[in-house]
Structure formats: C-alpha cells, structure tokens
Image 1 (cartoon, rainbow, N blue to C red):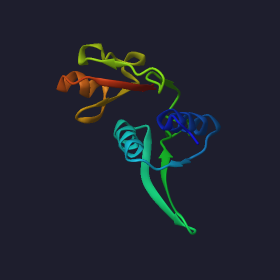
Image 2 (cartoon, helix red, strand yellow):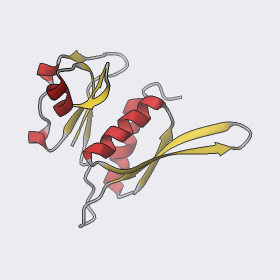
Image 3 (cartoon, rainbow, N blue to C red):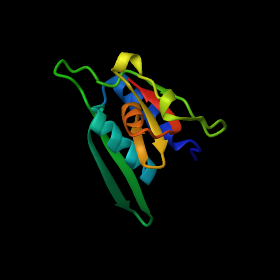
Image 4 (tube, helix red, strand yellow):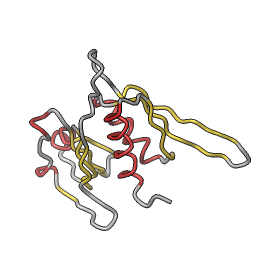
Length: 134
C-alpha cells in the first residue's frame, strides 16, 4: 500500500517520461485528479481520464497521457517533491517563486484548490507546497 499518493503519482509520470511511454495509470483519488487536471492546464499532460474495472470489486484508476513535442521529446523533464507525509511545508503567496526561470511550475494545495505558483501569486493565496515540475 502506498502512503504517499502524490509522490507515487509524480514519480510514475517522471519514469514514464524518461522511457518515452505515452500513458500512465495510477490509483484514483479526487486529489490526484485535481493535480492531473492542473498539469494538463499547464501543458505537461494532454489527456486525463478515469477508468473503472469491475472484476468482483470495483477498481477505479486515473489514466493520463503525457505531452510530447513535435520532435518526440517529453515536455516533462523532472519533478521534485517538496512537502512529504512526514514533513508538511506550507508557504504564503509571497514565497511562491518561479521554477526553472518560469519554464516549470510549483504546484500548491490551497484552500481554493490546486493552483500553480503563478496563480498563487496572482490570487494572493498560499498553502501546502506539493511539488515542482519542469
């Protein structure tokens, strides 16, 4: 059983990008769905869907498709987990700085939902810093 769903999800994305895999599946949760939708909005993913398998028990999975450029290179180059289950890190909107000169994003779980660093600065909202992606 995985205790850190967000960490597991972003590492699955990074590993799939490194080997050139197009689709990644992960156990479903509403929190991961919100994160996946935000990554799609930022351009790291092209498609976010859910899949339900009924083989005696209902298994719901989250299936995402990674974004690639016209040369076939993945748009996702790396991830860095910031807040972990054993050490939660919270920051105000003033601490939400640019990632990799603006080419990446810092994903923040705020009271208004999952936001990127740019949205946190614009809406003046802070929260738990989940991870950086570039």
